Image (tube, rainbow, N blue to C red; front, side):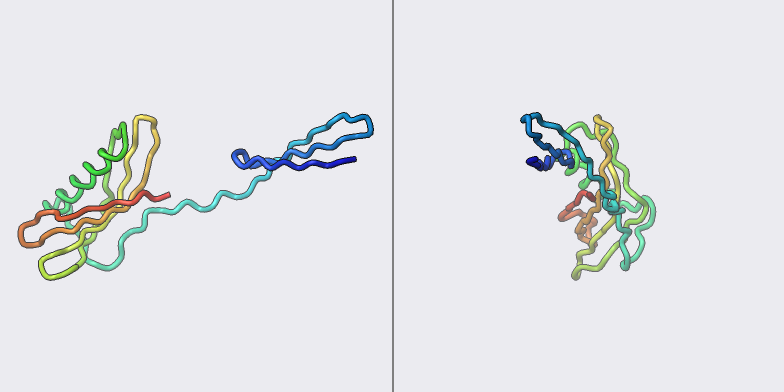
Length: 135
């Protein structure tokens, strides 16, 4: 008897085939399941100071992040921001606003993200913004 083992990466199963004296092949599919790794949750920012609801500079930051997301992903229907934004001191005249949110696309896929904006605290202008998708 000859045993052959094929591992199929995309589907995570093994196929075990064996031959008998008459050259007939028999197949058995063995599915290997493992617990799915825990999905990361948006990390609420720690430290800093809370950003008041509807604070104009924070809203400008959210607008810039929204525009970046819409420019990177097609079919974005909704973008929402969590009320956990916090303000951090970066340097004289510059603060950082950090928070999290989520957006959904027409395909009904939802994505969570963290964002960071640098703002000029003298004039309230957003000088830079980044976001990262939480996988």
